[in-house]
Length: 270
Image (tube, rainbow, N blue to C red; front, side, top):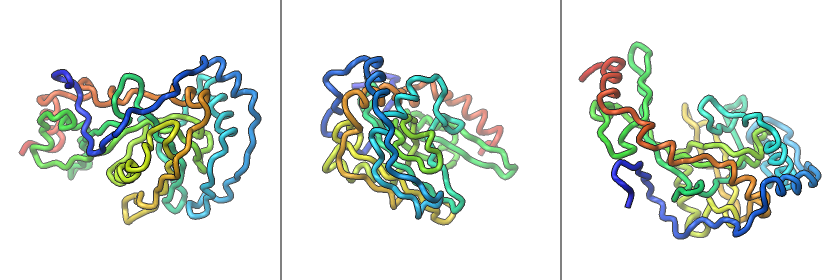
């Protein structure tokens, strides 16, 4: 049982088993030395930036090894959006495609995702009230009490296997926000495999189309089970994961009185 005041992870997904990790690993230095000996072998070329013309073939494992090796040898930070989360770059027609791999829970954490609520309310004057919602921690929220809608999403660590628009993202690990549609697809495949497993999980083919004014993820699918790579490659990838528990720790959320004062100032007391 979690200690009083600890963060709470909410999920409808049943995880039937522990996430397997390699039983033995070489040191990172040894892994990098082995990775650097592998020649890059490019087998596919992206001929168009349009999503419906993207060749979403299986990524080349040796090319991925090279990218991870190069990344580990430099201090240059990965290409990220302003919050440090991965976003599949959209094409001119508003679509996007990528191949991702959801990763196991970080060391010392139980689940490979956390669930977070937040508010992003725009007032008539054009100002915004943007805050994490304490309902995430089952605490009262002044914005919710005033009837302001909240948004729910999940966060996981993902490995980018293919990014046709920004190939510099490939081989890097990012935090990734996603909603109920993608979580539903995760839930669906849990009957046959653990999509977060590094050895027996599955690659996720992210396909985004425009559905009115909102992105539509329904065409996204999981491949069949496969390993990310051999023991050394898996160790290199898993070593890049960021803590998920830290994203929903109590200190991330402002106290009730502070939130209420800001809400009343921006949105107006009710």
